Length: 120
Image (cartoon, rainbow, N blue to C red):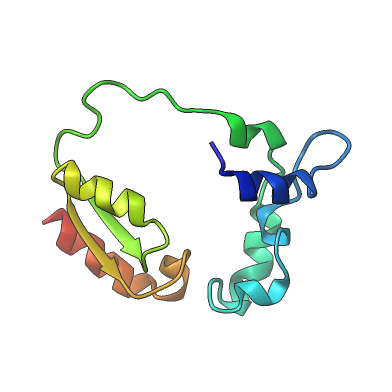
């Protein structure tokens, strides 16, 4: 579920059908300058679906034991610090590399190398 600040922001982006603008339009274009390479932005924008606003009120039910086994977590910066800490608690291999939310689009070879290293 989305936190209160995000829920408030999304409420203002919901159309009459209860659908959200594509997430690439939730913030000013300049907010993506370091996240999505300019040459890929239009392609990403066109591919973004319009989700129903109530999507962010849903909860997932995961099977028992889903955290067991050979898993790993690669973080780009520490925007998802709680998830990074949870990965530690679950005993997963984990690493944080410098980068923003969509760093795999900015430095795909570096991200792939880190994933391979974590998988080993």
